[in-house]
Image (cartoon, rainbow, N blue to C red; front, side, top):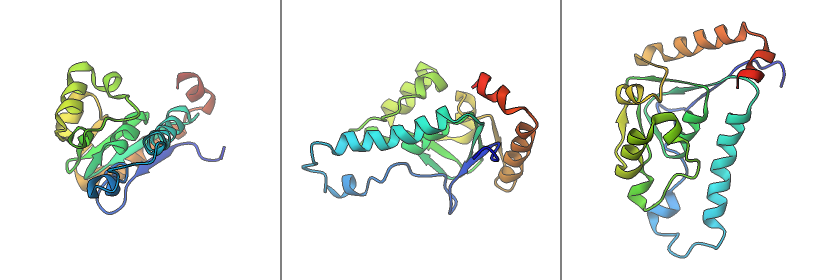
Length: 167
């Protein structure tokens, strides 16, 4: 829709997202997955991240609460990432002997911080994610919407052709 100038992504219910639905994996239902199960999982996750990455307009993630796994990758694919102080971010897939399908973290975080998150499964606070270079700004929970709206309005003042070139 050419009438949409900026896209902002947020979660509902106090969390950005826990990532991909791991219900089957956690319940043991994937003990004998179909031959295409992993490929399908990777394709769905990658498609969402590539859509955001290739969108010809700015995309902002507004993160509160949990931002894990595929959601963390999606947030890193966005052009801007804002979080409130409640945010907990990370890639806990290693705890399930899995790995992220859209491996963007080394480019966003740098190799040392990416390895910390990818190899330990440890979640990091919004403040740590800011230090790691994942976030543009951390704010108080009641300020997140206003901060994201302020940036969206600023971005709407630029010619879309400029975004296409810079993205």
